[in-house]
Image 1 (tube, each protein chain N blue to C red):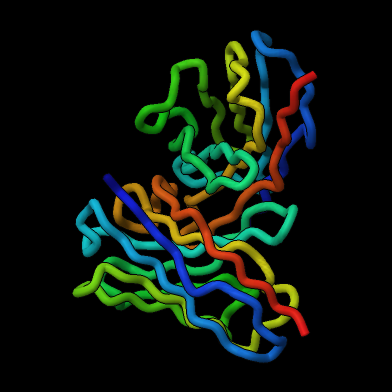
Image 2: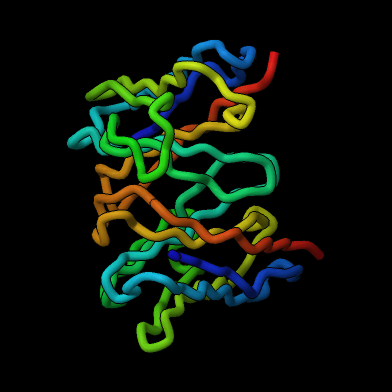
Length: 109
Length: 121
């Protein structure tokens, strides 16, 4: 089973700043099948990025994903107030076994 | 628009059973694998199970294998999760989610709002 480790656990930033979230896999993610989700309190997760770098439909271009192999990054170029949430990475390359990272909480500083 | 609506959650005693449902609309249900994902209170996401578009292939997380069964009724655009021998550790919000590309090597592009299952004596 591929274990995904996200860092930091909590990130405190101000609106307008740049956010960089990390996701490290215990082994190489097949075909870079790595996704990022955003979850706000009381809501279901929302798909942001898949295939490590492809934005999902309707996702603003301030969200970008990068990386390959075992190291992946989600970058939010300029934080908007609505971006403060919990972010999860997920690998779907070892299907049909899927794993999520433990999450990074992005909070307002 | 794509919609997934879960139902069937509630409070159940340890060792008992519960059946969740997920009603789909706004897309061609028979073209997609559908997943169950759960989230314990204050915790992260855990994948639970997936069923293929035709209902033939089913896969489960180790934590639920032998206790949970996923099924689908393509004539009614509905998915089910039969949960037996429930334990306190199964307490969570349960989401159904659609695989983006229809197959297994896909992220989850649409999610329901979730249904809460509480296992407690």
